[in-house]
Length: 588
Image 1 (tube, rainbow, N blue to C red):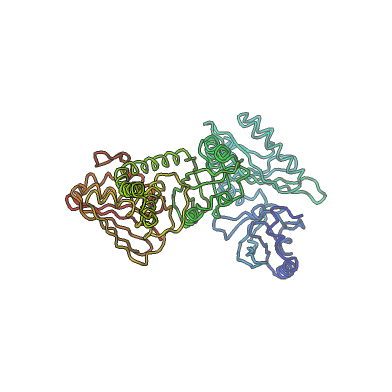
Image 2: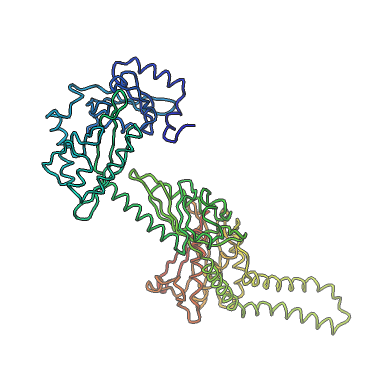
């Protein structure tokens, strides 16, 4: 079974790899083929001659064998004999649907140097990295200037000294030298290149970290010959990693103890992290949600709005808030509100979505109570006019009954039709009142704007006549239906028309017009009332703010909330003394 690191290699078809191997073996330069995950996929015969060994390199990280310089055009090849300077050319080769990188290595003049050569020593002293060479017994043959400065041994001759000797000279670094003795022995035992992380304490109390390669070299009979050591300082990188880990731990602690549910999602909406608060909100454990999408437990009526927000978030950097219902483990739906933010990488592509979710069930109940309170307020205000409207047919019915009682000769059948019509009128009025006042289950469906306006006209006509107000409607015939909660839209329209009636103390006309503008329905209600000053106009919709003596200040607040939930708008235009125009704008 292939190791995880060799995945990119084994993906290539064996037949293609044999063809490629045969091809590169014909080339006169050393060639290394590197898979997309930066592992060596193949080397040719010339490369093995350059290295002068037959070790298998397939599956090893390329940077363990070839150390490239900053310009990427030159580098150092690590061999059994030491360091080998090479020029590097590179390109891409398509292999099984992926692009493999090929490196062509060209040997530079005077490649394998003795550690005693002054030129090599000078070059090694210039390098801002840790370079050391030891013999088979752990005695230093060479240490560059960086090593002497690191251990505060400027001018010290390292030749022939072991790490144990250096620990006696510099006791402050004893732990470092003891660790080196331990890892050196591990490398000899492993008989291969080992990469490890070493640390060196500084006098100011900080710690310097090094990414170290240790390369064992053996004599032909197998005895230990040399240990090559190359270390690059990675202190800043380690510090950044530690800070990141600390930050992640801190934020994870915050997330896991927050009352709100904190989640992260991949671009397709799949949960990648869920905080423990989900158990309180939904009765579900975090692991039950991770790997799933929110749509599996989302209320069907909320899916359309949720997908629109999701599409907006994955388009680019964006923050959005949405209310929706999720299925609790016990089978009921819970009202939640989530604030979402899309996270982008350096190229501007969205890589993750973060959400903070809280339970708003109590808020929803309060809003529903306010709406019901507003409905009952309307019913109370209509009571007098409704009573008057009912009284007329009741008077007729009472008269007929008295007539029947007094005159036995009258054929009652001639009057049943009239009496039935009067009873139907009473039933219609009471039905409209009950429909308005009775709490209803929310149900979004396609409704007719014509029928909506007709209902409100019929309901308010008695009160309008009592106040000498005429309601005129003029709607375009081809107004499309809108998806809405019918009773809530009735409540909005009743509120607006009643406000218009109350503003006309001397009577007048209220005109209701409706038409389609682009992808929206515009329903305008215009009155001939006293108008509203700019100061008061700006405050319309605030809780408990009213311009009427006996108003509650709830009507327009509730109406505005209903319009927002329908993705619509409630707009006001008014001039003092010239009346007010209210626009209800709803998406088609």
